[in-house]
Length: 152
Image (cartoon, rainbow, N blue to C red; front, side, top):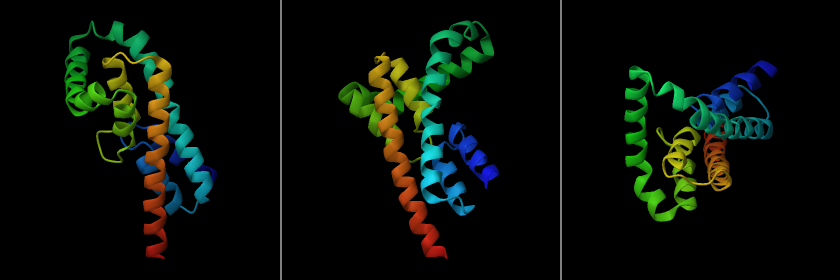
């Protein structure tokens, strides 16, 4: 069971799944439903400070490399297009909704980059991302439990 919890936490940290994959993985591998929610939520929340540190300190140095800069600019444009109108119009709530949507391309990674691009304060962006993650986890958790109990 520890291995499944660790794998669920790693999925929740991963940009390829976040808690949208971690929670279902944990529940379908018989991890307690409350432990799966808490572990995946907290693991997903840890992404924000790490990404913020990366964007504030390491991104500056990596932009000197052409292959990194090309990918970073492409990603920034994509996120700015997806989140731009919501963040510009709604600010805190825009980031919260953008992170909350449990669909591919949204989540804490994109939310952190969007809050960085739109120059939100650290505290405001952290809470918008955290509340959005919580709501997204709750949606995924509820849908997974409904599916799991429907399958059994």
